[in-house]
Amino acid sequence: MPNFVFIATSLDGYIAKSDGSIDWLSEIPNPDNSDYGYNDFIKNIDAILMGRTTFEKVLTFGSWPYDKSVFVISSSLKSVDKKLKDKVEIVNGSLESIMKSINSRNLINLYIDGGKTIQSFLKKDLIDEMIITKIPVLLGNGIPMFSDTGIELKFEHVNTNIFSGGLVQSHYKRIRN
Ligand SMILES: NC(=O)c1ccc[n+]([C@@H]2O[C@H](COP(=O)([O-])OP(=O)(O)OC[C@H]3O[C@@H](n4cnc5c(N)ncnc54)[C@H](OP(=O)(O)O)[C@@H]3O)[C@@H](O)[C@H]2O)c1
Image (cartoon, rainbow, N blue to C red; front, side):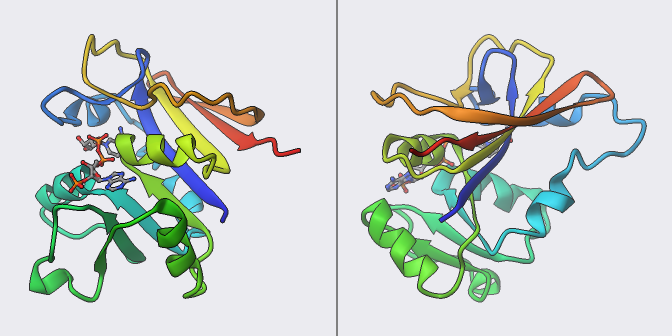
C-alpha cells in the first residue's frame, strides 16, 4: 500500500468499447500535447499491477511503454514472451498474498490498472487513491470502470483539473477512519 488508480473513462463510465478498443481516448484534440498528468503520476509509482486483458492490449501498442516492473494478474497466462521476461511477471492467488509478495520487494506505490482488476481491489478496499479522467463522450456500452462491489467506500476530493478538449480529471483519496 498505497495503491493508485490512474484511468480515463467515458461519461457513461466505460474504460473501453465492448471489443476492447480505446481509440476514442486519443481522438480528443490535444493541441497542447498534454500528457494529462501521467508523467507526474508515474514517477511516484514503484510498480504496475494490471489485469491480463489490459496486458494483452498493451502488447498491441508495438513498443513496451513502461520503465517500471509490471505484474500481470492472471490465472490463465503461464508465461510471457522472452523479450519481456525481465520486465513482466505473472501473478495469481489472493490479492492480499499478491500485495504482500510485491510489497516485500520494496515496491510500495502500486499503479493498479484494468477494469476487473480495479473492481476486485475495490471489493477488498485495497484502493487508496484514484485519478479519474472523464472523456466527454457517451460510448453507449463497453467495458465498465466500476461494478457492484457490495461495499460503500468514502473518498475525499483532492483536486480537479480541466484540460483542453473538455477532459475533466479528478483526484480522490480514500478516507479511512
Ligand atoms: N481507459 C483506460 O484508461 C484504460 C485503462 C486500462 C485498461 N483499459 C482497457 O480496459 C480493458 C481491460 O479491462 P477488463 O476489465 O476487461 O480487464 P482487466 O482487469 O485488464 O483483466 C481482467 C483479467 O485479469 C485477471 N484478473 C483480474 N483480477 C483478478 C483477480 N482478482 N484474480 C485473478 N485474476 C484476475 C483475469 O485474467 P484470467 O482470465 O487470465 O485469469 C481477468 O480475466 C482493455 O480493453 C483495456 O484496453 C482502459
